[in-house]
Length: 528
Image (cartoon, helix red, strand yellow):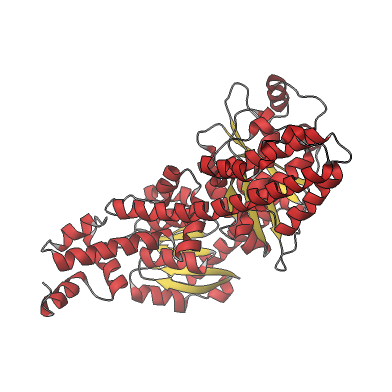
């Protein structure tokens, strides 16, 4: 059974659709209804319907605008448009907004039932195609692509082919067109069942490819319990292009597979030879999701400097980098004991320099100069790195260094997420009158992804971005109503609403009374 949300400003028609259509036979369950697009958008976020059936002509927010905003919020949700206007222009506009059906009114309950059956069939086919057949057949081409791309991603090739050779081979395999300039990125995704047990396997390759493939080029592989994907586009701003497919993958995993999915995203890069460092960025970014601030994380959400120049750090020290960023104290202690064992097998000074460089680089990626000064000041190991002559001494100093570094990183991660939310609030306080103020706009200014910023706001402010903006606008509106003689329309415009009716609706919903009632009440109480 799919779930459905019904949206129509005519209550009688809305009730007739809910009560007279044979939803059971159609394969749907109605989980909510709304009389306008504003309420529908809130319900879509809370109820997460599979399908929205909406009228196209509604006050305050049209059905097409609702479809557009739902696509941003829940790209996994499909939309059916009901319209009394036989205008193909509407249908053309609707195509890009996950519109799976376009029906003309008037339509009888029996006709709507039949149409919904057809729509259910389309959704069944879409689900089946997206989930894949579970085989991921290793055709000759796929084997060739795997043999070519996987060593580049893992950085374990015996030689280092030139960029020209890599692009030529990629072109021979039909991956990229000759002469075009591409942006690349690496995605790491892990799937878990209801018991939080990792169950990622080959069946998820098609699942990831089918969803990301609707938006851009993608080749995926199963690597160490993760689906690792190389994504590419000949357009600009790859990070923005990854926003919707990443969100759709997470939502579809829940709805189609009853699984949770966490995703890590590397920095965009322009050369295939940079795949190896991007792979490690994606793995690290996905591990950051353990903080509970959303299932999608880009490395740029956490780290403000490139780490590409450190690609040759050995595996043991790379593991230390991961533990400093996202590991537990027990995991770090276990690794430090391993470091103690390693010093008996490796040249002491070489290992010390590797650890010092890794700790310094890792701390600098997520903090600032003051934190680095603190790290060096409190850890004399940096001053006497070249003078160690015994393993016990270096072991003790390295343990202290790593624990101090982890404490600094944890502190800055918490501070940075809270500061980001404070910056969002500050921007809203300053620009709430701007009707076009959006989460995407602010996220670009703060150099983080919209998905991550949205999750942080919910985590720290206990409300979504729209709620923050509405709250600020309503407080400003109430102040103007009480303290000034401005007309309602002028107040609406100063609070970011070009439509007075929309403003009045939002105001009444927030305060439980109309703007005029609040003003009149204040006057009766002697406040105006």
